[in-house]
Image (cartoon, rainbow, N blue to C red; front, top):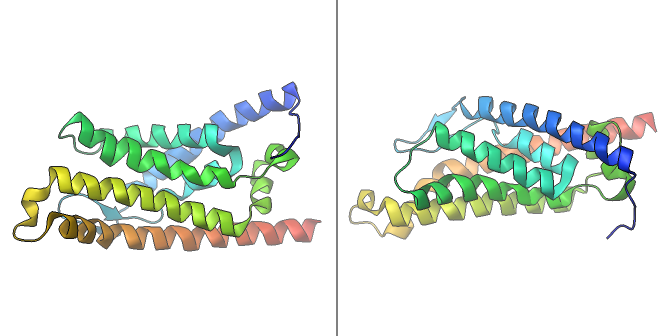
Length: 200
């Protein structure tokens, strides 16, 4: 843990930047979620990394703002999604997308976390924690969707075991989505790190 004490003026500026940047990233994620490269018949699709702007935001601003942005995005997804019961909404939207925010624990610490240039913060992200926490976020989302499938959509499994059906169904679109997101995230972080070294 860092002992860095954030000056009040810096904290105030960061709050404004978080609100503005968060709004932009949420909007970008919402737009990307509407571009479907592949769509399953009963919900779920592969997009051009819809959650990547959220992940970038999480890496820049940390857990408090990161989880908040992911929860706002989950509400937007619910508005354009499908509601069966309140518990289904919690699993499929609130928890599934909200837990993507775990990647925010990979944000920079100390002074690097409060750099005036928000994009430069990404140059200090450690790849391994970012990768592992992104995978964890997708795994949490996958787990929520699988559980929802077993509880609320078991009738569609037919003679197949509901758990196998739900894992197969959700894995069909979520694994490619996670792969696309991870690759693009690493490309973005790699470019920013290289740019930062050249300027240094």
